[in-house]
Amino acid sequence: MGCIGGIGVFLTTTSLEVATGVSFEWDNTTFVHLGSPRSVPLWSSVFALEALLRLLSWKITSPLLSPVYFLIIPGLFYASALGSGHSITELRTSGWLPDEEKAAPFYEMWTVRQS
Image (tube, rainbow, N blue to C red; front, top):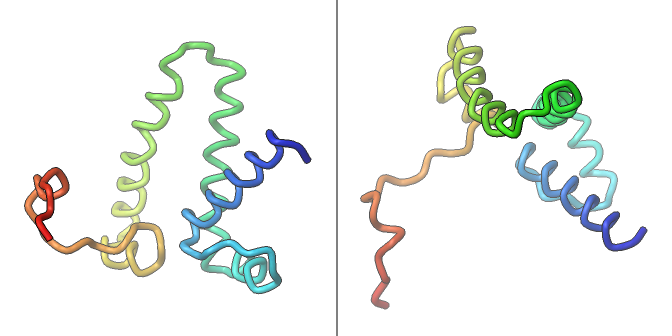
């Protein structure tokens, strides 16, 4: 497979983990879960967006394509999700958004912990 192929496998399995929220293992349960009706829309939307970016990059050679493309995606996601009547809570429970974090001051991550 080689070094470059190994990096490609790593990136693919990591993207499947992030998209579906399930730890990727090379076993039957993982592949059954990836084929479940809950998981297929989560990971297939990621691959569809990547395929669209590849197609656009063949036609559009501007260096601004990728940044603009990635800035547009969240707006389209929220417009379509909320426009179709889904609530933020429903999007969280179905896996489209991560769980809500506990409230903390915004500067907490830059403070040094004294323990």
